Length: 130
Length: 377
Image (cartoon, rainbow over all chains, first blue to last red):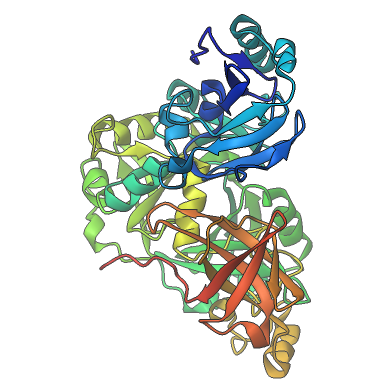
């Protein structure tokens, strides 16, 4: 069963968000990395780039396919996970830790409330599977 | 990100190993109407590397088999395929193509010669019905019988440097005596089989054909004697690894490098085009094209900047969009991003610099010699 940490927020596009003040750390879920297979390449934006909600901010590539990743919340990128350039496999091995992708300074922290809770996301993935 | 889940619909065809793929945790996808494992839990990279370094096991039972029996078997198949069937001896296999009158490709295939009046054509899964109709429609009174025996056979490919020692434990046949692109018949674990020293991975290995209802026995036995589950044992491999292995080995995939719009000469398959063997479908056009020269050519390339080229992306030279990627992928053994693309013939020289339009970003690549990977012998 895929790991869904309690303290995070989730999008229906399988991104997770960890909130710390007005900073949101964003990555893809365990369920998403498992569906994708071996991640070999991660493309992330530059610090300073601004995104609206649900905008494509980069891509995750497995041997077989490319998947776009979307911003669950709007804001400006303040930090990117540079280690993914050399260790994209962190997205598989530690999706909620070393596999984080970007940190965003949220323009509207209230947007987090519209995201799924862990329990809701778990139900959502179960429904998607059926 | 968007996850594409393939729900298994009842109309998908299944090989006799479908249940075992699911038991092994295979991720099942629709492949040309077949419900097939794209990968198992080990993952594509590990499956690919295990095949290069030790051995991998592939279910290729979805491939089609068409039997041609009768006194005119050889002249008939020689007329519908581009390679020279008359050069085969009993127990030999040949890579060839079914050609259209335009010299383009209906399908690529293997022609097995059992005897002068008995050939077996092994064709791609997704094209089996098309090929069967095509072949029947060109049967014009020759003394022979055609039979689509696809459903009667399973086909299991055991590939990699350890393949021979694993398979040898299950058969009295002297496998070392079977030369590359030759085959023999005998029993494997007591099951009557065709054992062919062929494959689609660039490694030594065998393809075993047997009655469909023996598939589970053979598959299970090969995993058992191949010490599946150990770090160096045989590993079941899905279609994703099959694709990356064949790509590294520089082999064409029907529907990608070759189809009914590409001629054999454009696809660098002149070596299976025996223009002097006598008439065959498309011969005149191929001879004409050889004379006048081709306009575009299939080339291999390596990406030289950050990025992965993918199927159907455009090739850019200077300011011009000159062609398309036919297969693009990371190459797990070579640890490079490689691909095949069509480019104008005058720009196809090895060493040439091209760009690939990777979702709006132009990424540098260089034309290289193929195969990308060649095993040490």
